[in-house]
Image (cartoon, rainbow, N blue to C red):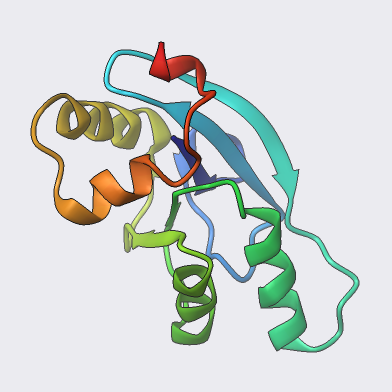
Length: 128
């Protein structure tokens, strides 16, 4: 499944959803994980609601977004697109979250995570 992180460097989750410049996108499965791409979060929209919508649209393929902070309206837009927002509330290494996610995926993931895993359908390199 694809997971986005709000990170200024790709190493730490250290950005607010509404203020980050880029999203780091990873493909994560129980036995393998790799960074895929960096997606720009910069938009020319002047209205805050339009900026939030543009960010959510940029992450359509992702099942989860990990961010330090996210406001209620932004979280609601993500949930409406079936993207699960996860707040860390402090800086956390991306590698730590990737490792924890893989451990959960190896066991018995909670229902919301099982649903998120199947969001994209087949075709992931991790489905093999």
